Structure formats: C-alpha cells, structure tokens
Length: 484
Ligand SMILES: *[C@@H]1O[C@H](CO)[C@@H](O)[C@H](O)[C@H]1NC(C)=O
Ligand SMILES: *[C@@H]1O[C@H](CO)[C@@H](O)[C@H](O)[C@H]1NC(C)=O
Ligand SMILES: *[C@@H]1O[C@H](CO)[C@@H](O)[C@H](O)[C@H]1NC(C)=O
Ligand SMILES: *[C@@H]1O[C@H](CO)[C@@H](O)[C@H](O)[C@H]1NC(C)=O
Ligand SMILES: *[C@@H]1O[C@H](CO)[C@@H](O)[C@H](O)[C@H]1NC(C)=O
Image (cartoon, rainbow, N blue to C red; front, side, top):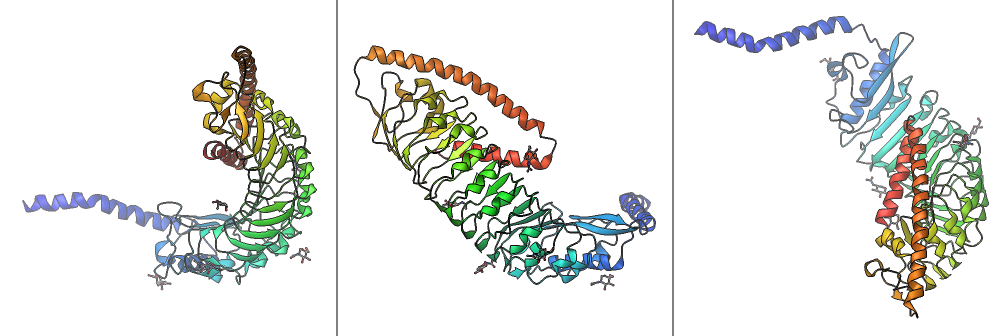
C-alpha cells in the first residue's frame, strides 16, 4: 500500500519534473543566444517598471527579453551582434499585456534605447502626466511612429520637439488624450510624415501655415474633435498626396480657400460642425478623387449653382445639410455618376426638385431635401419612392406636392400633400414612362457598382490603403443608414 502511494505521487510529479528539466536545459542553451547591451537592458526594465509599478523586477521575470523570455508588446532586432528594442507597445491589447499602474509615468531611461522605431501607449495614463519635458530629441535618429491613444491623464502641450526634431517620423497619432495648447509650427520639418492624427484632444489656436510646405508624403490629417479655430491656410495646397482631411467638430471659420481644389488625390473632406462662411469654393469641382464631401453644420451660405457638379465623378456622399444654402438645386447635381448619399436638408433652397434625380445611374440610396422652401410637383416614379423608402425625405417643404395617381399609397412620400390634379389617365401614363427610365438606371448602376467593388479589391494587398478604404465605406454606410 505504501509503495503504491509513492509510485502514484511520483507519476503525478512527472510532468512537473520534466518541465523543470526542460527549463534548466533552456536556461543553459539560451542565455547566450540574445545578448543585449547592458544599458539597453536597463533602459527596458526601468521603462516597464515606471509604467507597471515597483513590483516589476525585469532581471527575475524576463532575464532574456529579446530571446526566450519575450515581453508582450516588445520586439527586438539585431545590430552588430547585440539585440536592441525596436518596438514598444504598452496597453491592454492582448490578454497577457501589462496593465499600467494608476501612477504610471515614463522613465527618462526610455530615451537611452538606441534603435527604438515605434512607441505606442494605449489606455495607459489615467492620472495626470505630461510628456513635454522629456528628451525626445534623443530618439530623433530612429523614431518613426509615435502613438498615444486613449490616455485621459495625458495633459499639457504637445512637446515642440515632436515636430522640430523627429525627422524620421512617419506617423504621429495623439488620439483621444487630454492634450492642450497650440499646434507647434515645426510640422513643416517632418518631411517623412504620412499620418498626422490629433483628434479628440483640447488643442486650440490656428493651423500653422508651415503645415503644407514640404509635407508631400502626408496622406492623412485628422484634427477632428478639438477646439481649433481660424481659417484653413492656403498653404494646404502643398499637401499634394493627401487622401483624407478631417477637421470636423472644431471652431474653424473664414472662407474655404480656393487652393483646396488643388488636392487632387483627396478622397475624404470632412469639415462638419465648424463655422466656415462665404460660400462653397468654385474649385471644389476640381477635386476629382473626392468620394466624400461632408460639410454639414457650417454657416457657409451661398448657392449650389456656381459649380459644375457633374465634374465630381468619384463623389459617393455629399452632405451639405444645415449650411445656409439659398437658390435652386441645379440639375447638374444629378450628373454625379457615383453619388449614393445626398443631404441638402435644412437649408433655404427654393424652386423645383430636379426630376432627373430619378434617372441618376447609381442613385442614390439616400436623398434628404427636407426643411427647405422647395415647391411644385415631385416628378418621381412609384419605383423611386419604393426603392428609397425612409431614406427619401422632403417633409418640411410646404410648397411641395406629389402625384397621388402615379404613386401607390404605401410609397407616398411622408409629410407631403398630394397635388390637386385633373385627368387621371394622362397622369398614369406619365408614371409608366418614369418607371421605364428607372429600370434602365438600375442596370447601369449595377455595372458601375461592380466596377467600384473590383477596383477596391484590386488594392487589397496593401493593408494601409485597404484600411483607409474600409473606413470610408463604413462612413458611407453609416451616413446612409443612420442619418434619416
Ligand atoms: C530583482 O531581483 C534580483 C534577484 O532576485 C535582485 O538581486 C534585484 O535587486 C532585484 N531588483 C530590483 C530592482 O528589485
Ligand atoms: C484634462 O484637462 C483639463 C484642463 O486642461 C483638466 O481640468 C482635467 O483635470 C484634465 N483631466 C485629467 C483626467 O487629467
Ligand atoms: C526646421 O529645420 C530647419 C533646418 O533644417 C531649422 O533651421 C528650423 O529651425 C526648423 N524649424 C523648426 C520649427 O524647428
Ligand atoms: C495621386 O494618386 C495617383 C494615383 O493613385 C498617384 O499616381 C499620384 O502619384 C498621386 N499624386 C501625388 C502627388 O501623390
Ligand atoms: C460633433 O459635434 C456635433 C454637434 O455639436 C455632435 O452632435 C457630435 O456628437 C460631435 N461628434 C463627435 C464624434 O464628437
């Protein structure tokens, strides 16, 4: 009996013993496989300790951080026979990521890392810290990516050195922190910059005119959700590669510069919720790549008639609601080949609704004309109303009416009265004619739709572009399905 017990406990212990053995073997074989510079190793341990707490003992927990005891979020590379940290991602991204301590801060020893290319802090700083006084210039020769995302305790100004000395920087993302102050004028020196995201902070002041100049590689600007003000500087025309310009939810004012039209590669222009005035720039029609023009909630004013809208051949979504527009809706707006979302609601537009909106090739998954002074008879077919459903709105235009003979009861546009008309026979024929046109329109829309889709999948190999395109498609769907 006694013998049996001890055999049994030996068997139970076996996996543990094997494990110990394996570990001892790993110990002896790998202590020499990933040698690190002492200073580099110390910098890494001190940095993590300053973030996660005093309990962290790197020597004990991660004796070989670039080898057999990897640290989640830390990657290394070999330089002249020694291993150096190249990437550090801090924050709850994976299950086994470190949690930042409530009093997390950044150790000055971080800046001793010799080959750090990418530094990222996500959801880490909750109690007040500033990164202004840190010696960022020491990373100037290596750092390509800086990201501070969702750190409500990150206060103070953006370190001026971010812009003045980090010449290799390709991506600067300071998203949803508590940063204040004005934007540094040194951005013009960041000639490698591709992505500049400062959204969701408390930045104030104007866009520096140095933002333009040499930033010919810049693809993305997102300054949305800050308290920035002043006009959009004409130097913006220097950003010739720009794909995405998001300045929404700020206090920008002044007239939109004519130079905007020179951004020929821009696909997204989001200026919603600002104070831009003095009409739409006529050069808007030159932005041939533009897919989304979102300008709602600005006192822009002026008319729609001074633009050749059909030139905007790529435009998918146009939001000009709440922009103080007057005058008529030009028929050329129906010439935008890819348009799927058009919001002109809550303006002072007058005159008739152009009947050719019903003939548009891809038209329009959503058409909002409510809250204007439009008048006369709506000339759309029963099929048009049926297709758009609640994504067609014309209510709040007291002078409008629809043809009750040509439209089935359930398709009648909401909030519009039926026209007072004569002979039903003639009207029914007119309805039939519209139906036929609408069917043709559906077919050509399908052709264009499939060519859009194949164009997108063609670029799928390049993740960055893919992400941009997907983000834009999501916005379009959001606009179409949520805005009614
Ligand atoms: C970490 O642990 C080692 C050995 O257990 C000890 O010698 C060292 O002082 C500790 N380091 C810190 C910073 O506590
Ligand atoms: C964010 O900044 C404001 C003003 O600059 C300050 O009052 C507030 O306490 C800051 N929030 C945090 C979490 O530090
Ligand atoms: C930009 O770089 C130039 C020289 O390369 C320098 O003289 C200038 O001070 C820099 N600008 C800023 C704002 O740091
Ligand atoms: C604009 O886009 C086209 C096509 O994608 C590209 O060939 C061209 O280089 C871009 N222009 C600039 C200035 O980046
Ligand atoms: C932008 O501002 C509008 C109007 O003030 C507000 O309704 C909207 O929620 C804001 N959007 C974001 C993302 O903060």
